Length: 374
Image 1 (cartoon, helix red, strand yellow):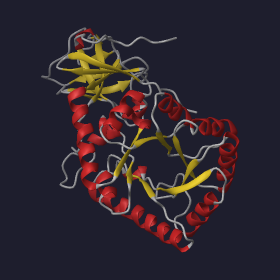
Image 2: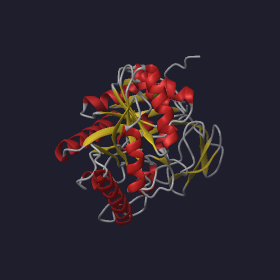
Image 3: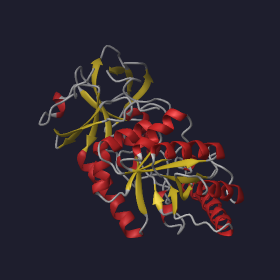
Image 4: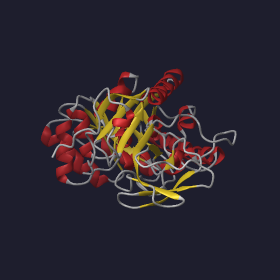
């Protein structure tokens, strides 16, 4: 079943059916250009992360602004991008299973594909898939930068795995995956810088180990929206994988910058538009957007430009909004904008972005990698 967009081009914001995922095009474009100008100035490359936006339309805008390609986490996301014409995709994840590897190798017949490894058996299986399809796949050694998630220990162990990649048919050793996601939302800039400094040291240790066995990591890829300047200015990283910078969310709004002020590198451009469906409560109202319209694992959304209004409970289809004494109580049918707690899983709940400028719908983009969890 094809779900129609919640609005048509030219409609006013009041005519958009809710709940709907809204993009403020002016703020979005400023975010897009700010990152593009930054990477052009520093000389690092931007390989923007599509796990955030999950849309070929958005990916093409990033590439038009200078990004060299896209990152994804899942083969299904890579398929959506390559099917739309994106030519350079890195899967920043370990892909396990013959069927997934077959699909990935098929994509390498049409685009440049990279994959991460942290085990020899993964290398062997990817090599077999590449040989069967007659392709070459770029291989990256993922090191554990401190996340305690995926990745081999930096240094000699990582270099041994890189050697294994170089010896595998159908694979080309390309570099190091060194992403530290746990650092992105640390509360203070000091904490984020301290964690990324450790990651940088791990990368250098691995580079030295690679050099000792005659290998060179041409690409050092990682970084996110919360720390991208630190990696870019390290002299070590060659690619940035930031994704949330386009949209932002409450989770980024609560961290601090170098001066101790609220993080303001980028603007909020992503919102869930919701309609007030009940005003029966004395000190609260109910909106028609709940957990099927935004994720709640990082906490409730924030009411945009809604002083005295706060989302206090979330259920499947309802968001209860407390109204503080003396504040404007929204009326029945009034539309409000909610800033999601976490943009990535919120986007995955929708089929379309509705791009708005000056109160009118100007663009509609399909979220064609929605639900691509395999």
